[in-house]
Length: 253
Image (tube, rainbow, N blue to C red):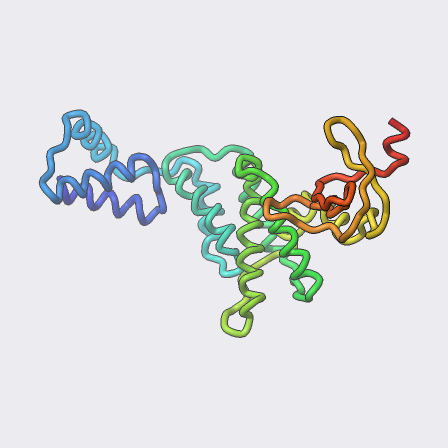
């Protein structure tokens, strides 16, 4: 039985399948090799998995597209991680959803229309700001946006390369990954670059449903939690606030 389990495990691993059955087989192999007892229910499930054999892909069209993209050097490691997860699902016998199929098509399209991503100080600074701003969103937000989540990994990888570009090759990065995240934070980026709240100007902040006058004493910046912060002076006390109001805005309410 140990030999059967080991052979089936190799089949799972060669296909990149990390399913519940895979981890169960790995545990059973470990226990059997060490002559540990397994329960009757574990043995019954193990026999069913062995009888079923290697998982067979049903969505062969999607699988073929995934495999062709996985072989390309121009596909970033972040995109390959997404493709690998989809490949595992396809090999497990699942039919990919329309949303997943669309994601595969988008990765393929982006690779075909790859545009040169130029490196300059302004771009590097903007990427650093974008990555800082991503911390303001919870992981649940990014899980619903897999394309943007992979873009975060791509930008991080590219940024690490930009710091040490003399000792390693430039990782793949297309302009779409950059723009997909930039669009999410375009309001914050615009505020950082051209703030309407210049140093020395008088603004209002809201405290317990009341508006209080505040003197802007510095440029906006990004906090550790990824929010745009404005340093102000209120009654001779320095405060850091997320939102400033124009006096005209408050009067109109």
